Amino acid sequence: MQNLYYEVNTLDRRAVELYGISETIMMEHAAAGMAGWIQKHFPKNSSVLIVCGKGNNGNDGRVLGRQLEGDYHISFEYDPNCCYDVIVDAIFGSGLSRNIPSNVALLIDALNQSNGYKIACDVPSGLFPDGTLDPHTFRADVTITMGSLKRGLFSDAAKEVVGEIIVADLGVSRGRYEIPSSWKLLETTDLLLPRRSTLSAHKGSFGHLAVVCGEKVGASVIAGSAALRFGSGLVSLISNENVILPYELMQSHSLPSTTTAIALGMGLGAEFCDDELSRLLDNTLPLVLDADIFIHPMFPKLLSRGNIVLTPHPKEFTQILRITGIADIDVPTLQNNRFSYVEQFCTAYPNAVLLLKGANVIIGAHEEFYINPHGTVALAKGGSGDVLTGLIGALLAQGYTPLAAAIQGSLAHTLAARSFDKNNYALTPFDLIERMCTL
Image 1 (spheres, helix red, strand yellow):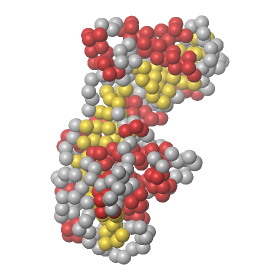
Image 2: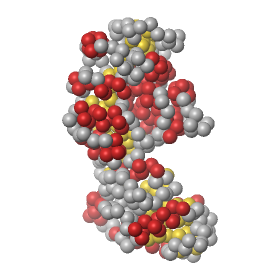
Image 3: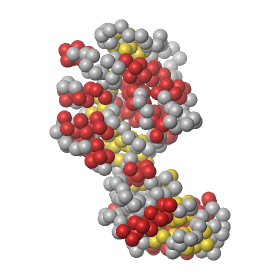
């Protein structure tokens, strides 16, 4: 995991005070980080356009030009008749607080349409600290950010413009430069699979997930199949009527006595009356909730119990915010303020774990927040969320804490999608489930 920060000016000042590093030294290191990347990826004599603004970001660009001059053809003025191998955006830094002026907007639009490989210095110009975008934001192939990771780089909107993200140090190691942060970025190495080490174990050793099967049976079958694939020893679908299921999934009309976790909400509809749901949930078992349960009259009561994971997509989260009285907003407003509304919800409900779906998944629990940036557009397919619910349910059934289940289930979900090596429109839920075997 890596730390994430809303801003790093505080860290810069701390480095100056503790280590006596001047702004000039920081600037030289910032430029050296970009220069080293260019030298590694582009041969000498490549043409490099460096577009500089008036502030520190522009100064970083000017120092970069000095460091590369002699080995590369450096230009600081954009010529629409020229072709550039590399285009460096050093116009605005991470402190942008106003809309981009029209003359600069026209320049950025022209740069975006150019064919050169595009590098953003610190952040793409037009990306605000909260992760929202100016309509004329620079679209980078790689962002070389300075000192530490900025949280705004990992908004859903930012995913369209940041490209690959690399951190350049400023003359002091990140271990010394950084301070603890409540926001973390999840890395692929954070995945811990539910591997089995006890040789004398049996199926009952790995939990029993009960999936409440509603009107849309397929959603429960997908979730149950994912749970079984991800290590749950037993999976039962709880239904009122007899339904046709894969042979490996069990069926019951009541909650099995051996149940260790419950998954509820996927395709629920109006299959169960309030009394039936109340009986199913008259316990303290861990819960993972999704979809229809968020608009059920019982939902506010469920928020009061512990051991609970919520997995809404943005529209469902706006409904949750409205039901809980936190905010009455639409989806675009939420998407522009995802970090803030997750924090507000987790403050109001510290015993719940929230997993907000999106291009970059946000997981929050009280005062701990995590971003999973590994999702792909291949997951934009009906049933993908049911797989995620099943993965989290499997881990809850096996004894994981709600926060650990949300983190590990989300990582497995996104990394499985990344391993899909066919056309990104073709991924199905069962392709995703099958890839749990190869993580």
